[in-house]
Amino acid sequence: MYDVIIVGAGPAGLTAAIYARRASKTVLVLEAKAWGGQIINTPDIENYPVVAHISGADFANELYNQALALGAEVKLEKVIGVEDLGKIKKVRSTLAEYEAGAVILATGSENRKLGLDREQELTGRGVSYCATCDGNFFRNKDVAVVGGGNTALEDALYLADLANKVYLIHRRDAFRGEETTVDRLRQRENVEIIYNATVTALLGEKRLSGIEVTDKITGGKRSIELKGLFVAVGRIPENESFSALIDLDQAGYAVAGENCRTKVPGVFVAGDNRTKEVRQLVTAAADGAVAATEAVKFLNA
Amino acid sequence: MAIREINHGDFEEVVLKSDKPVLVDFNATWCGPCRMLKPALEQVAQERPDVVVVGIDIDENSDLAEEYDVFSIPCLVLFKDGMEADRSVGLIPKEQVLSLLD
Ligand SMILES: Cc1cc2nc3c(=O)[nH]c(=O)nc-3n(C[C@H](O)[C@H](O)[C@H](O)COP(=O)(O)OP(=O)(O)OC[C@H]3O[C@@H](n4cnc5c(N)ncnc54)[C@H](O)[C@@H]3O)c2cc1C
Image (tube, rainbow over all chains, first blue to last red; front, side):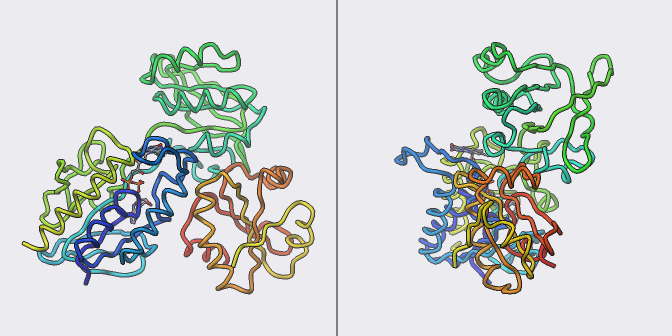
């Protein structure tokens, strides 16, 4: 039995662990993949107060070591369910079952998939969710970016410097992202923007060789030969395992106010998987502090 | 124990001609998820002496990355008798690395 079990060892979860340990509570953090969360994907963080520049991997390791040094226990196990038994919460992982007085859900978010046939199979074989990570493999090749937000626009601009040709495929007739980025893209000779269209099939046997694009207005289909498809259609919160326990909004975010309390007493939510306006490291860390403080208050009551 | 890094010079000897299965970790110094995968690989190497675990920097060995269709890293490729037997793309926990070996 632990005082607090934290699900997810991203910035929110590990910050919560630090605060709960400093309040002398026993803490178990359960993490599905690797400590650090999404931030490990970026080489450059430049907006975290006091730290002018740090890589995502260093940020993750420093934070992890800080939580460990304070006595938090971290296990690499994916949580598949949390049950509320009043004073006790049961947390089930892929390997074991644990009990805690309070639970903090800090599971963040993951890349939204297109939902196409063989998407998983072709991931890493032409389909990618990270242009800055994988762009280099497509030097002087033809690639496409799907999406209409800032990430998609920035990915297209980044790839335009590397690739032979970049198709930017957007399902609407205008972009949601910043106008200046859109203008810069329009000036690139090797960028072709395809509006009102969706990717409807992935082509190729062992590796991606092309895509089928469907025009949403005419219904017409065309095939485009290319080597890389970069998917930038947003992120989705990882809350499916808790949908029976707490309230989720339409987009799947865990409903909780600034005090990080869910409708279940003793179950808190912290970080990117919570309903809120700004999803950044500093707000994830802030949530971790608040959720842990609330959990300690709940345990001491 | 650090994972041994190999390159195109010794690839054939270490990977293709190996008697034991070889788990190759295609990675790059700038790749965060690759760095996060390393501790798990080190543990696997320790627990499974029947398997050889090596790393390949894709920036210095782009020919090997191309030959083996590596388009995303980290990418783990398991070789048995010189042939690809299995692969996994992206950061995965240790248990999943182990299950790749069986
Ligand atoms: C490429 C990129 C660059 C970014 N750059 C910046 C930046 O420069 N500055 C900035 O402030 N923010 C940046 N962000 C945003 C920042 O990374 C997030 O806001 C922050 O990581 C959110 O932290 P979190 O702890 O809420 O969630 P996450 O970081 O998503 O961590 C959640 C953790 O929970 C784990 N998990 C999920 N489900 C389960 C489960 N069922 N059981 C166990 N564990 C589970 C996940 O594996 C993950 O490790 C960037 C994000 C990306 C993707």
